[in-house]
Image (cartoon, rainbow, N blue to C red; front, side):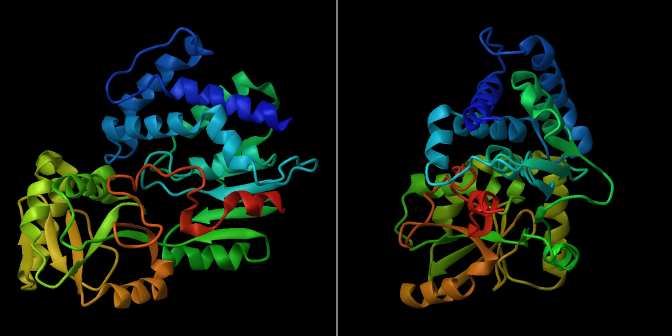
Length: 351
């Protein structure tokens, strides 16, 4: 299949997904194959919560919005400019996907197919509703995709390379089993924000999006703050107050109550606004409804620390750190924002 055909098919997918937004779900008569897929997708959005209670309609539609913005002809063409992707001998790439946020493995799926390879997918049971539908849609738009995409629930066999995402614990098993193949193996990472106290109310409000989107379950969710001594947390609490209704969501509330009880029994010092707890802690991964923070003496020393700890950090939100993500943008990665900083497309193009 020609590269231009692969790109065109994903552009059509982007147009299809664009019909599903948080503002409204509305059918566009110009979109291909709506008669077969629109109502099915709409139904699965409603049912997704049955599979994973964290997958709210808002979270799913937010994901669809982001993907539709990426799957445009200009974005895809600009993304692939620096790669050689005319693959005459397609390899089979096995992808083991996480299930922490909706369609978290889509970028790997896209990368394998755009690179001209075949994909063998092992989904998480927490996120298994949408990618098979997307696959069917792509096959209707571009029949040459048939036979290139396979799903399995069994042990992975007959593949040439792997992309596996999991915890630090499962990564050990991935490395033992897949180590003899070309592979990308991802472990736990978390995102952080470095604050100075000079951030505007608007910036701190946008930081709330980085903290609370997907209930903080994504690797790009900010789970820890670095702040200067005597930082005034009141400004942060005021700026994120619009997210107070999260506490009414039962799964979030249960985690808040449970973690608060543990902290209080352990006599940890907490800052609490009724829907988010702030706890001083040196760890990067904080529990749901908790945000860790750590004080820094000076920015130069902090930058050195972050360089040393880079393997634990997915992205950084800040106005004072080089190559940091803008406030409110962590959950809107571009096609070139590769997980763990590993260039997936370069890896695939060199198989």
